[in-house]
Image (tube, rainbow, N blue to C red):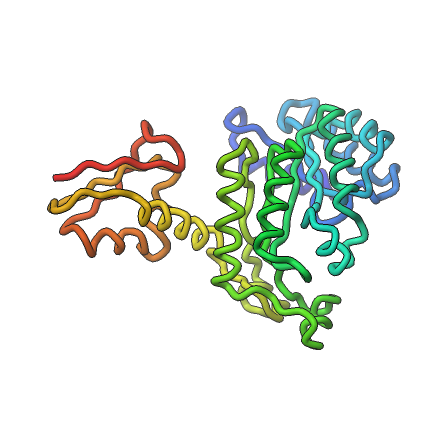
Length: 297
């Protein structure tokens, strides 16, 4: 089964063009019986030995990391371990019935980095008991634990979950979309000033979420990351100093930042169009990420 999935995906990837990893996500991988973990690893080994797969990454819980588990992972070409930290605030973890503490995350993170693995720490915003200040503190603590990667997920209420029961009873209120964007924006700026790379912002827009067959409530948007990055760039532009009057403003940004700088539905372009006759956003490889410079005509 695993072999066939890997083969199918490798057919779509040119050889020697990119570094390919296999990821085991969607559950507590290290909570599986060791023999079951090994069977998954054995399915990947031939692809690693042939050079088509470089390494393995997996996700698990902070309280399912031990030296013995790490030894098994090390023997089987695992390079990156992502922990579902979700929050580094113990009251939030307790109210969310996470079953682990912030200390568990700290100790597991130190074991992972000490054993030579790359560490990813996933966080959620808007859990029961969460606040914007707590979310920002969690981001700072993730950076302090030397995580190389993170994922940021706003909490959604999904049908059939305990959170749905709390929502229906009025004991839990999810963030509004604008709140979630603001919280995430402030969390992202913490990571942007660090060496922690953001892999994802917001849940993947699966068919079940888009058509709302499982979504009960919460700040879901299929372009959530774009909305957040638009606001980050809008803040940068609002705090900038721009000369007037000029007919044309040229705004140079790194090509990777171009879409976010222009903004969702052109929000940031419209900000300048109220001030200048012509606005040009110029992809410029010489401009550093998350920065811009302007010239006028």
